[in-house]
Length: 260
Image 1 (spheres, one colour):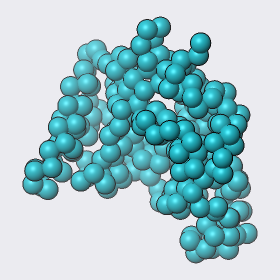
Image 2 (image 1 turned 90 degrees about the vertical axis):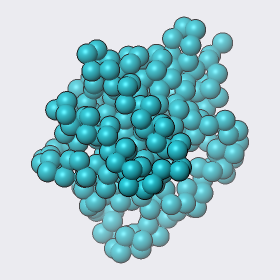
Image 3 (image 1 turned 180 degrees about the vertical axis):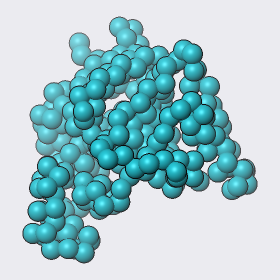
Image 4 (image 1 turned 135 degrees about the horizontal axis):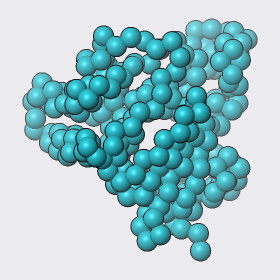
């Protein structure tokens, strides 16, 4: 069931602030070392430390800063859940009128890190029958609900979500607005008006989708930066590096190696 739940180890060597990051799915950050500061879309601020769990609802647009320690990289485990899995536990949750906020579960007294091994062991054991596998992956969500948290699912009609979903199918492609509009069964003019009402422009969405995918690869893999640049649709590594630094204020290489 890897299509319903994905897990990745996130590491970062240098403190950096990442603005306007978009999370299409429900995303859980289990912080293992360092800290994470998050500014939500409603300007609510959160600071997660070692042992804490930060929960980003689907459709979140946040600014966050990952802070390594003096002698240790920032490290967290990120787990994403599809809307289908979330709905099995939170189907009766009311759909929020406004964008739901980030939530935090503290290391004390709740000890959220205790549920992480369940997820890891379940995903690693490919011999589990499908029904048992699915039930075990629901356990962390049931655990959250028992502690009073309510997780919404994402409206499929949100412009940003739908456009990014199309772009993410092939980041290397030189997407044009008319091609994405065709995939969404609407005219380019209609799509642009639709996006404008939500405060987003097509060119910015395309660039941000590519850069955020690159950031994720830098934090979770050892893939060479030159390959990441091409995978994200940039013609040259230098173009990727320049665009990355312009947006995030840090070079791609500094994600993996501390400034000297």
